[in-house]
Length: 115
Length: 112
Image 1 (cartoon, helix red, strand yellow):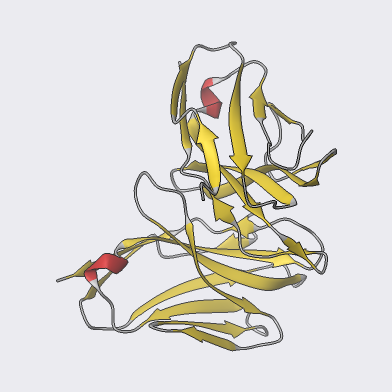
Image 2 (cartoon, chains in turn brown, orange):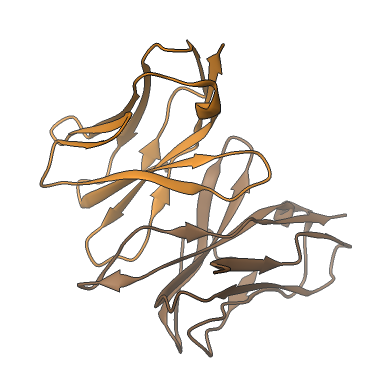
């Protein structure tokens, strides 16, 4: 059972380049989300989705796009990377029971450096 | 504005003693709280949770206490073990909001 899989694990970009961080889960979870972790800032929510075709903004959505075409996948797109987006990114998923999220399952993270 | 705060960036405890990690929140709509543990180069892993209808939840060596009037929760680890050395995050969510807000983390070091 793979759980939550993130690719790539490491990426270096130049300012202005675009890229997509991939996230896939095999637990049939309705809820998926993206966080970024920065020193002294903890984990901050970027975007989340409660099902295919439904996405919403988190705490720090600017500079990122998401889409949810299937239950399994939730890619995070950086259209024009900036040095401020250098961070470690985590994808997380959860089942929705009674309309509320339960325990979040996290991927191993993707470390992105923007030069 | 930080809605979930962990004011102690680090904590050192002797093996076998109790570790107490604290977390404060400001949003009175939060009603579900979780603790996660994170080792370097790994994703956070779920440790224990508590609903606002309770004031205590235990799971083995881990106990979470919730004081709603003070908007404060704490994680107790007894006895502490060297393998508990990690960064601990608390998180909070409001019913139906689908947003988990995390604190900044506390790095626990358990000394052998």
